[in-house]
View: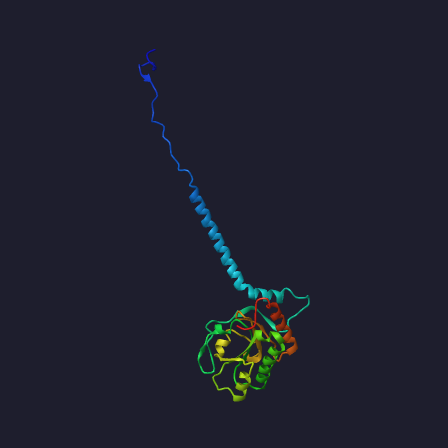
Length: 241
């Protein structure tokens, strides 16, 4: 033997050959970056939760009143007026004007329960009875009457008779506006076979038409329906806009 090498036939020396060992170096996790990612995910989750809460709060008035009216009620209770399902939202572009012809934004009608009467033509005897009932029904609500506004919508541009105008503007005055009949029919609708102005319509503070009184309604029965709605919304709806 010579040295530390061994020999094989042919005289070639066998030694340690090949490429040097190579290592792939991986960086260690950065605790700061991981914490930053966790913070981003946490903020994203919190942001989504806040958005859902905002949506829930915005929808809660309608949900609360309708849940109380439709769900939390004794067995066998039936409503007298017709419930509108689904509700009809007040069109933002409803072309309203005041009696002087100045435009009025539909959004000004929101924020209060409304008893709406339409006058589609000359106000005859049945129209006068309906307007009288609108006024009396509001007064019948007692201390809750300030949570209700009367709205009278005229579809024609003819001047109002002085006596009718006086009756509508005597305190507590109604909100008197004009609107084209076709545009109004895109929001409110009578029962089959009736005229648009044959009913009183109930609109919630969000601007949703949700109830229609029968033709020539019984005041006491209609009052019970409205009273239930007001009780169901008492926790969030306050007098005044």
